[in-house]
Amino acid sequence: MSEQAGSARVALITGGSRGIGSALIERFREGGFEVAAFARSPVDSPHAAFSKVCDVSDAAQVKAGIAEVVARFGRLDVVVNNAGQAGVNSLDPEDDDAFWNQVIAVNLNGTYLVSKHALPHLPDRTGRIINIASVLALKGAPDQTAYTAAKHGVIGFTRALALHVAPRGITVNAICPGWTRTAMAEGRMRDLGLDAEALARSVPLGRMLEPREVAEMAFTLAGEGMAGVTGQALVIDGGALA
Image (cartoon, rainbow, N blue to C red):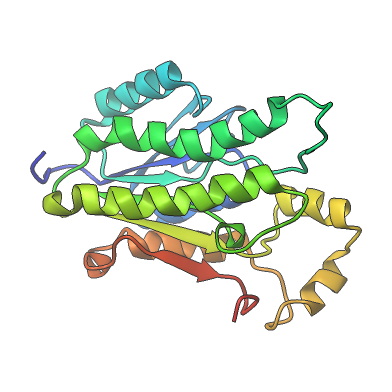
């Protein structure tokens, strides 16, 4: 598809109901985008021009949702695949595989499905796909094998898709946040028996990230000045992986 002209650029944010997703919606709207948001629960943000309850692991819901976005705005310029699910999964042979399958479906399959159905609508040269991965895309966590595997998969998908769409000038990158002040992080801290102060001491910069910082990196990747950056896994973690 050739580059579109006319109205404001349109960004689709998945996982937009809280945390990093809410910050992404706000930042892209501040930057002049019309923002559409998907989430499994209703999106309550004054910055989203359109929102839809959508399970990104369901191909039919994704296809219908993207069609609605394009019908409403007449274009789609940027996709931020932020929807995710974490949690401790069992490797006990007596336990079923439902949670493993769900984590893979949301984090990896969801990123694939949204990207797949968005690609025909993204403009050449200025289209952007930004995948929110994790530092666990680059290292392991012994009790989160499903989430770690899924996020490693997101990085592989990012690199392969970047090469696939490079002839169109569309860029595909991943952001790998470390500890970020979200409800998901609070749940993880409970799993590990950590409090916010102890966690902050473990980070070289001495603090957790704020969702806004991750959103700022995504917004920057969506800009014209980053047109030469593609297939990358960009870390924002306060120095934890240094």
